[in-house]
Image 1 (spheres, rainbow, N blue to C red):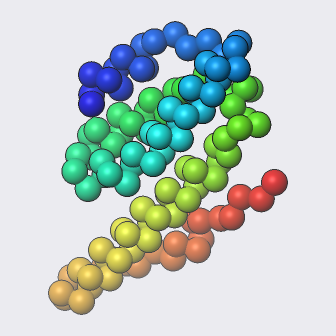
Image 2: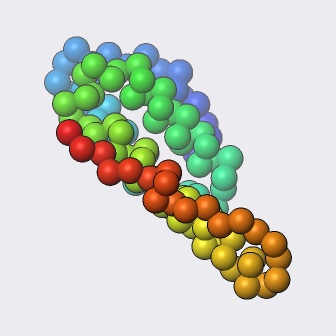
Length: 113
């Protein structure tokens, strides 16, 4: 998987043709959905997936903005991870460890067009 991500990251993608743009949109969507599979298995690989996603979407944002909701994907993932982190903190508090619980509502927001 790391080899594939490296290849995708280094490949020059042109979005002039609609077919190539469709492939890019599909790839970005698959990278986002792959997050749920890879995060419990390999954190380093998860970071590589997001690095490729950010690079692709940053490079081609003018063409992707109409086809992908770039902000919603990242904000929902961050909110989900923050909720998991909060649950971990609450579980450690139940075991007698001193922790400070963060309010996820302060950090999460709903993206509105």
